[in-house]
Image (tube, rainbow, N blue to C red; front, side):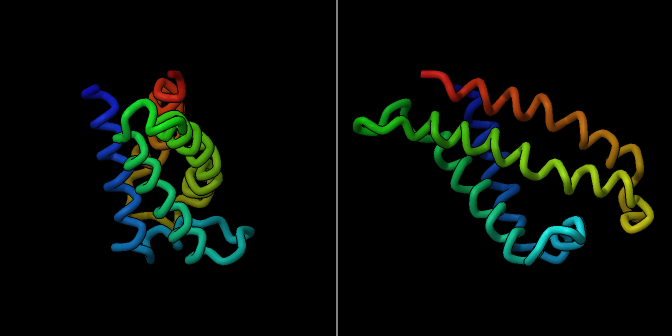
Length: 122
């Protein structure tokens, strides 16, 4: 329960930051993706909603809200991987962020994916 609560808070906070600091997130959006600001808002929305979904009981009526939210977060973490790769490959654009932190972010996605995946099960 504590792990799920921590993960939920992490995603709710991260999603909220997309709305509070959209300029930072649009800056890390790879140039080949269209409509960066809209993608920032969409990803932030789904991060926050996914985090909220993790707080739901295992089954709300007959719909598995928690499991659907967890699968959504797994998909979202995979979908944002291009932004993490972009930060590593074009690090000079992000000189204010230490290179070690940018590199750490890439493998950190894997345990986050695993952590969210834990809650896909009934």
